[in-house]
Amino acid sequence: MTHTDTLMNRRSFGRMMGLGAAVAVVPTFAFVPRDVGASRVWCRADPLFLVGTKVIDVTVGSQFEMFATATGPVKIKLTTPVGVSVTQLVSDFGFGEGYSITYATDKALEAGSPAPEVRVEVLAPSAADLPVSIFFTRIGALGKVELRSIETQGRSNAWVAAR
Image 1 (cartoon, rainbow, N blue to C red):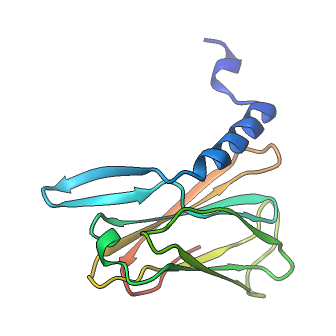
Image 2: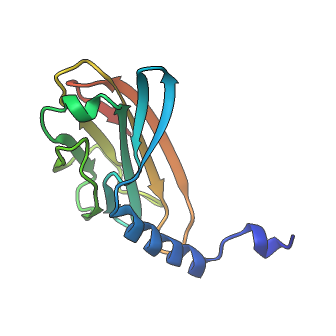
Image 3: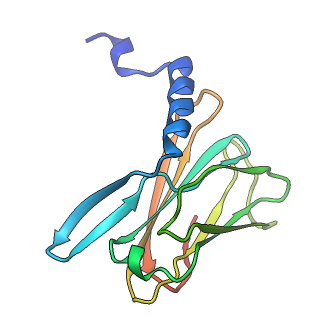
C-alpha cells in the first residue's frame, strides 16, 4: 500500500462530495435493531447546508415507530453568526412529513476561522414519546477534509440542541 492509497486528494474529495450530494437526494435508511419490536431508524439523507464554506449535515434519528406517529414536519432551526451565508443543499422526506426549516443569527456566535460556530435545534413532533438523536456533522468544503460530529439525545415533542 502506498501513501496515496490511504489519503484522499482535493480533486477526489470534490468528486466524492458531488457524488454524495447527488446520492443524498434518494432517501436511504439503515436499521439497527435494539430488541424485537424496537429499532432505531437513521435517515442518511437528512438536510445538508452550506454555512460559509462548510457543509453541515443534520441527521435526525428515532425509532421506526416515528414514521407512523409523526404529527408534522421535523422542525430545524439553524443559527449562525451575523453575516455568514446559509444555503440548504438537499434534504429527504423527514419521517414522512418533511421539514420546516428556519434560519436565525446570533451575535454571540463567532464567524471565526477556520469555521463559523453553528447551533442546530431540532423538534420532531410525534403522537408518541420517542427518543430522538441528532448527529450534527461539519464536513470541510473547498478542498479541506474536516469531519467533526456531535451527537445529542432528546425526546420527541421537545427541542433538542447541538452546537
